[in-house]
Length: 144
Image (tube, rainbow, N blue to C red; front, side):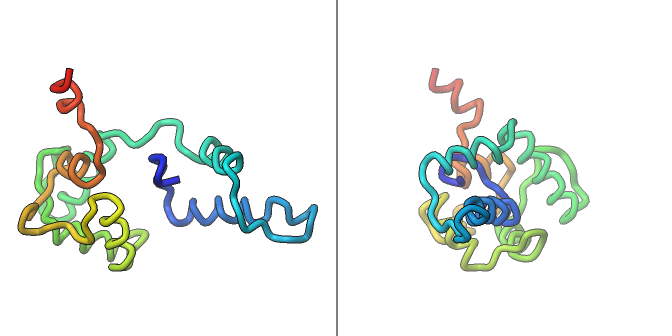
């Protein structure tokens, strides 16, 4: 799911796996352990949000993180220390282990870790473009 741009929480991903696992249980008495393309497409259509993540969502999240750290608000304006972001990802909400964070960073950026020397702090737009790989409106219009 994540490969096609849908980033469910661990709880949502587990619910989808359970849906597949038990889909034939009442008929066959066996758990379904494999997913075919049709099932994957059905899961994507049924579980992905109607409105995908937008830059404003990321701006809002960064604003909340900045307010928590510094009492500063302002969508997309402040800079969050890379070390603070890593700390929050491994200690708040649906916590990621260091190993999970390394796997995600490797998949997203090709590196196991955010380079704190190259990027000591990130804005929400830096995070969107440099980590998530989103094309921002300014980049799209510059290509035209």
